[in-house]
Image (cartoon, rainbow, N blue to C red; front, side):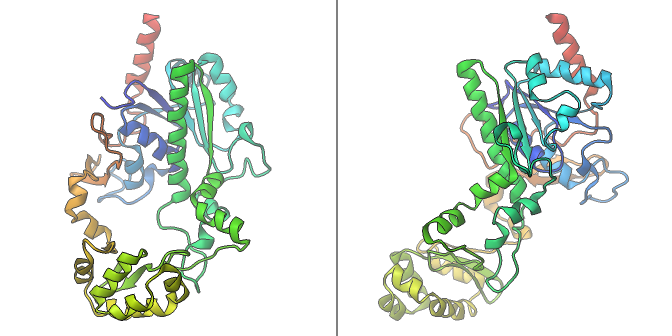
Length: 390
């Protein structure tokens, strides 16, 4: 029994942001009913596959963010399917969708309509540019993806090497961070409803979320009047706080307070640097030359040796590949790799676990992602039973 096992979520989302949000809710125990359009979520067919895309029901993309959900296929253009959806809304706690603004209204299934069927409903949307209900702009209705959000929100401008082009982050933070914030908003709305009996609309825009995500750049612009830009793996106000090439890879070192700096210099056998640059302002003023000194030292030291020499004294870590992550005992002890069935393949696969740990109701993935329309009879049968009971 998860912490949210009393909640039913109708999940109309697809691709990444919405499914990640509802995945978090499912991991925490909510009954998430994934309502898929005819043909299913667009990413069901996305690779990678274990072996044979023709035999396997879905790829890793879909599996990762739709685990533990139930699926029903509905066509909102069909009157019977629309009625089935509205019957589910009457008993639901939360509806989540990530269509363009106005899409649900085309089917007369917008927030205002659904609350006629369930006044306590929490209706949540994830859009590129938010919803007119919470602040209207001329961008609403435009399509948006992670790349668009990162570009507009300033993430790309401050990511990458100083002499290189703007670069998006590896993970899709435009989707994932927005989804996480949306999940927080939903849970806040649930708490508000517990106190007042009132449902409400929750709206999270990807562009808005990237402004929150780049918070440092926002205050830098305000305080200094200058637009921050790319500076590789370094930090604008801390030094050393960077990645350094080693004899066999890369390691990161975060030795920005005075004691960390002295301990780093000791490991480098360069007490002269500790004595010459004892304070942060002095180190920041001479960061280019000091970075070269550290880089010269690290280039001759194996990654593990470098990290071991600093362990317990200076924050440092290897830059790991996913292969190394899979071999890390810490990851297994923390249940951060979860095996699930891969339909159509004679094997299990592993997906990322849930980082939220709780003493009584620890979130955990509850099995594989659903087959398309796998739970139609189960879900509509439950609804028929509820109606009969009423």
